[in-house]
Image 1 (tube, rainbow, N blue to C red):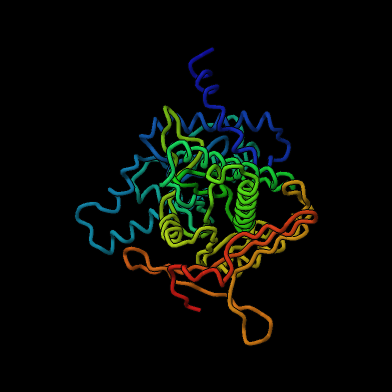
Image 2 (cartoon, rainbow, N blue to C red; image 1 turned 180 degrees about the horizontal axis):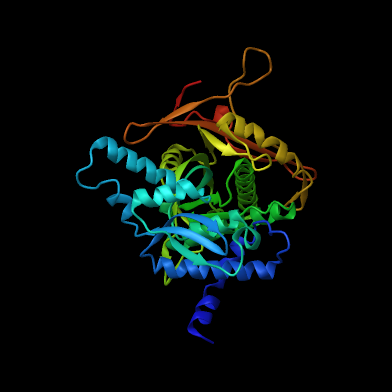
Length: 410
């Protein structure tokens, strides 16, 4: 076996993460895997152990053209000597626009960006056409492993084990294993209904950040579903546990916001999972600091999301988003939890009763962080009613928020 073949074999474990993408017409899974490996090996050679990043790409006949440069381009281009503040701001905006574009660039824009960045495009010759052999979405996902991306519209969940730092190391590892099992069990439940969420997670020490590698409204709704089943599985595990400290009591936060996504080097390869850093992780960290044990918080957001069914991009706010999650939840009726089928899942944001009409408003809260900066949030509840079992109530009621360290806005 050649050194290159051995390297391919050692690096095959990441392949399955890309099989959630739709197969191009006329391409089988085996051939698709071969194409993934072929493109990845070409990108791997250009990446050169992290020395270079891919900043932009476009398909051409029998291959790709890419803009390749060291990571230092991100600071050097916007901070070149002799440029004024306005030019520096323009250059930062240009770079952010590139990082926010995961898709291919149109040829004229590709050439324009290459000229502005003073980069000579590199040609990757491939034995197949990109659109027919891989598809543009899968190609973008493969290239993302060799670059940095700015993402504005992805939802992220933060799960946190209450009182984790007070536990012994052995208790901590048992609790993290329990939480990991709940994540896997929730994922398996969604797979039962052919909801193939392509989720990723990274540990925070006390818990996990969890997100969907896919983007768009549907992908974010699927992540909200995953969060609900993680919390449900955790609640059931706590009920069954002979020793309560073996299963963590959770608090959870859900938010949509901007972040940078990157892949660290692991040995000689980029990792098969990404890392997030940016505004959304900052917001979630501030939210979780104030969340009460058992509480579920949804951050206040208003951002553009793509509707994958229509291709349209539309503004989605927190209240609209939670309302959108209700219909997909009905499709999960009949799914079994702890041996009992689900009759109904009700998810909603809590509020106080409004003027004798029997209806409830939605309360909005403001959290002040340690720097005095405000963060707006909503309190969420999830009620899972089972046909032959006790209901599972997740989150806190409005009347349970006496000790919630936030100022009520509405």
